[in-house]
Image (cartoon, rainbow, N blue to C red; front, side, top):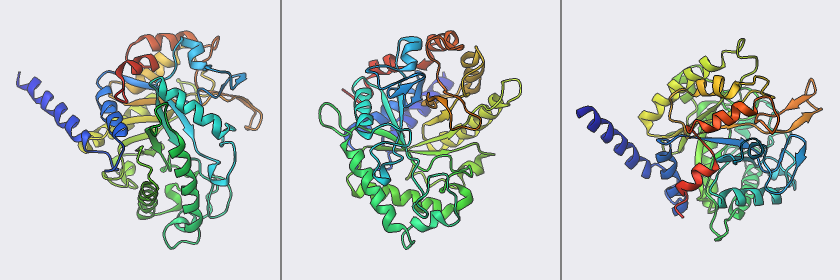
Length: 373
């Protein structure tokens, strides 16, 4: 009985703490409700997400109400991933070729059905004007206050603020969303990654972004701290901006080789163990913000690999990357997708994955009324 009472106290303490945990103390009421409900939902299961799900899939684009995930199992993902990349240079399309006007509509549709929105930003390098993968030294420092590109950076944030504030639901309210800027920071491939700046510089970048967006009346964001693969707790936390600057903890991990060759399950479980211990101490929800196995060549990957990699950890969500289809620009050219579609070799296993009840899709989360209405 003492054990039961102790666990109940721990859960209540976590729940109460979470109610005051949003970094933005002026967060909209809907955002606060969503965050608290996301914390509670981790006791029921893990939400499944897919990048660009409503925009296109393998061999199709912009077909009303279509989704490769829905084609495969009869249900939409619970989490919809989108990206702001391209907005900073006044493009009418984002980095994945989706018109921003269409992306707004897809976000509205997903939210109205009860789904969750997450937003990343493959922001161009303000220092050079090249893409996000340009890692010219001193790029990060250049956008900080006093830096040579600070004013340019603020203009880009202005554009993001205008767009984010334009994302409203059918009642005219700003749509709350998970915001995951400067992702995969433990990697080496983006201008904001750890090889291009000190911990203090990254923290300054993060906190300036947050405060500047808030000054533009952007109060509907749940801030998601995100790394790529990390070695240990110290590595995960080295660039962490602080408990008052992050609402959720996450990392990205991909399987690159066959399950027999790739230690994906072992590595993911190790990192989840470390992140979970950090999250319990900090009272933050956790997620695998990006994952997958390109083209899913293994028929049982969902139940025999991904489920094993997740283990018993109470994640908020796990999101697989986009379904581009044939990509002639990759080296070598190949099929590039991460969710099954109708007839794909892992479709039946994905159906079994869906039926476990442990992984939540849109029908599941819609019942929970996560936005409070």
